[in-house]
Length: 163
Image (cartoon, rainbow, N blue to C red; front, side, top):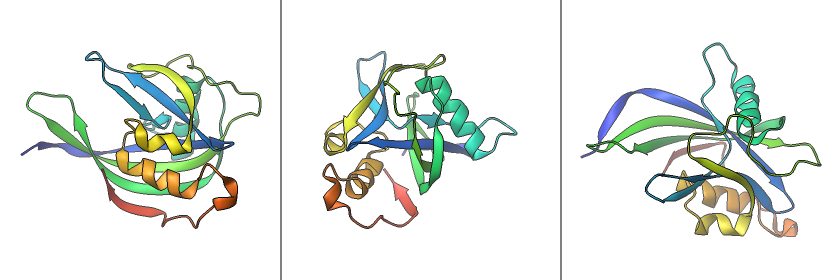
């Protein structure tokens, strides 16, 4: 059984969509594995969720973001690369955001430790990538189809537990 680390981490994420593509961080780890995540992270002590998200996005993406509204909240038990294996409980708070029209995807001044680059990924490709958390890629794919005329109702704001 995997041990659960004490404490709950709050993570704010930016869902930035443009023309059927989602802006993601591409991360490469020492063992060669790759992962894709939405930009964002933990707010610093004293920061609001929005302030933390704007700071994290500037550090990782090198641009300002405008926050359009809350998209989803979910519980996530994030596996940690420890020996023995552990997990950390995390609350994922995802906001719909947008970047300036001329923004070209690229690393910001303080990218995450394993961040290789920032990419626009077609929504239909998210489920084929190692997207973390996995359960969020399906939700994004359902609510932002690659053909705008196929828009569907958004799932509930609170998603419960995702993997």
